[in-house]
Length: 195
Ligand SMILES: [Zn+2]
Ligand SMILES: [Zn+2]
Image (cartoon, rainbow, N blue to C red):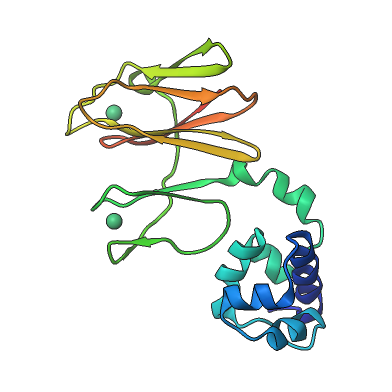
C-alpha cells in the first residue's frame, strides 16, 4: 500500500536533489508534469508500473518509495552492500542491482546469484601496485570453466571488469578500502571475498 502523501514528499525531495524540474521528471517517465505535481502534493500515487523507472531515475529503492522513508541518504549509503549479481546463461551478460526490480535477458527472468565464500580453488591474490589493487587468481581460463568477471564493491561504488577465456586473469582496480570482491566462475558460480 502506498502512502501517497509520504511517497509524494519523497519524490519531491529527491527530484530537487537531482536538480530536475517536474517536467523533466515527467518526460523521463512518459507522464504529464501535472501527474508529477499531483504526486508531490499527495493527491495521487504513481502507478505501480512506474515504480521501477521512478526508482531508477531518482536513485532510490522501490521499497523506499513505497514506504516514503525520508532517511534515504543514511540508509542508502550502505546500499552497495546489498548488491546482487545476475548472469544470463544464454548470452553471458552480467547485470547488477541494488534495489528491487526484475531483470530479464534473452526472454527470461534472471534470479540473483547467491555468493559463496572464497574456497581454495577460487581465491584471489591481491597486490598493491602503485595506487591500484592488482588482482589475479590461479584458476583455469578455458572456455568450459573460467572466471567471467571480477567486481570490487565498496559502499558507494561497483567496479566490474569482465574477463575472458584464454586470456590472463589479471585485473586492476583503483585502491579503495573496505570493499568486497565478487567474482563469477562459469563452472562454480559467484564468490565473495573481503578486500
Ligand atoms: Zn541474455
Ligand atoms: Zn571454478
